[in-house]
Image (cartoon, rainbow, N blue to C red; front, top):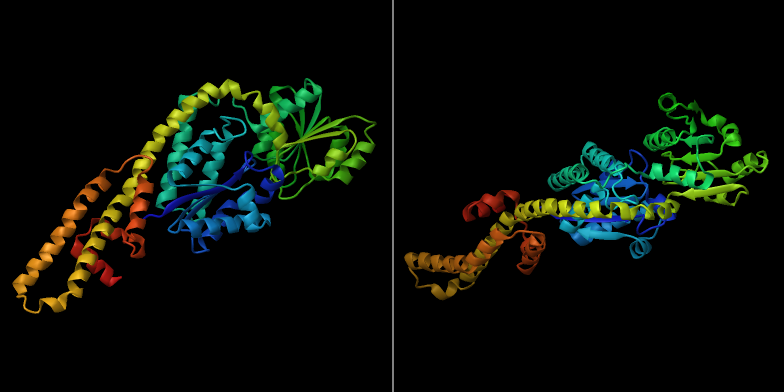
Length: 445
């Protein structure tokens, strides 16, 4: 049996930023987290996805209860939260086709704060590549993520759900413009030089703003961004003097800790002669200490504050989102068929072997009653018992091979539980083996 697919996660729909930032996996950490899950012994495959709006784990296990407990425990340790509290408050879970459907929706941008945002496709791809590098994927997750990425691409190609290329970064810039008016004469400081910073820079350039890029770790990239978007790049040691003259601060680094504190900002604001400062922090974990909101003259927004701005855009993309839903269901049918066929043949082999084992056991238990039977009679009795087993299991076998659709995996699992097939696991080689070969395989194992 291939195992069950599990999903456990939190997102902007279920958890505030205060909790999401505790469960965030810094850049390059997701692959290692997946490796730690495999080391628990309850997980066979794993991919961890962490973005500003979600942390999700897709795992394969042979014991769903133990698997969920292992993933929940790992997330709880990551966030320093008791597992029961985490499970009760925010964690959502799904299995098999429902877990796959969720990933398809995530990759297509339908679960994003900004419906259709394009960045999530790349984030899912990088999470999968990180798991590949760590060697934590397998047949099920490889198929799942390959299909999800293909589905996301199809949604963006065949619908206009991503029209306008809106992103968290562009909405952050729109929020700043909403507060301060046109940005052409405003001085903007961008903290960071990564992918988020580039998206912020692009949105600012389209609105005519002058940008100062502040970064140390990726100094060369900051210089490249400054050259491309007509700004200036400086190091973090120059941040106080840049903040002294800024109108807007947009922050989106990958720092695991806050890089701008309230006391530091208080000192800077005291020399600005009452001039207001708008700070929009789209990083998770947050770059700006939430206490900065209490500094006089500072207006601070975090990524959850962007949801009010985003809500006004949702109706525009609603019709395209419905078209995307149809495409996802079309792709889901393919995955469901594959998932079902993955387990049908091993289940058929296990069911027939269980029936033959019961027949053999009954014959053995009654051996003493048939002392007068000739060898020929014994062969006939054995053949009769096997014929009864084959006749009894013929129709279930035919129906198993016809299983299709979204519920195939669930029906197979129910059957395996009813006949206790997982108490004596069937090896992959048994799927195509004859009864005699199955017995020989088990004898050798």
